[in-house]
Length: 365
Image: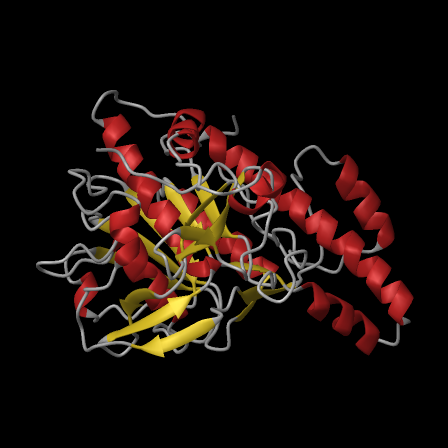
């Protein structure tokens, strides 16, 4: 276990310097400062003003009558920011930090919605998965257009770790096409740009893996961090059952829990959403999810980016439950409870288990 958190530096790395960095034991990893992007929702719809009715996912995961609320657990969200004045957050002490240079607030609305799904509270309704969360950190690592960089992502993760976050939700990933475009813009051929982009992408993913490994162990005086990430919305099984895309980074990282989305069919049976990427660890509600709208009222969104905070909220409840039995809860213990308690979806054939992983996330009773 390291004695302190690593730091993030940005510099021009020559081939010679890169060779030296690979042999430097103090460097946990490096890669291009690639663009990151929001796992954008596939659908957005207006909802009745301000209410939490219709939060169907709360019931299907068992949170509607759970005694556990996430009380005492510090959680984090890295996204487009948050509307701190929204009524869904009046009972939560929010610590917000902007890494984009754009300033505080949420000009996109995605971060506000995801935060509401994660730990929102509305009197008379359990609208968020973990309404008992008293301390939440929200890092603005994506701007109002849903764009960021690897630097802001890594800085946000380290900030969350330094502040003691035990459960972190991410609904973003590396923008591979942007890496290729940036290289081509310098005059590099399409083939060379694709090759360099793949190399840079792999290096970034490995660096994030190593960082996640460190945070899973827990730094001195800090809780181990369990990270949840949206698997992505690029699949199109409703067009072609074979049109299923693998989990996108960061969900593809080894120590990160990749989350797929489920929705209700006409016959009320839960099924993996057609847009949800495969290769997930588990799945959570991600279709027609009601959450707070930046600026007031509510909005309905669909996407794996909604499923990720659902699963992270469930983990916060498990962390509270396990913490009531013992003073310290390890990464492996919390992860095994979250994954091991999942409910296999009915009708999922063995050759499609990668679509739903361990199944639908469930909460402690």
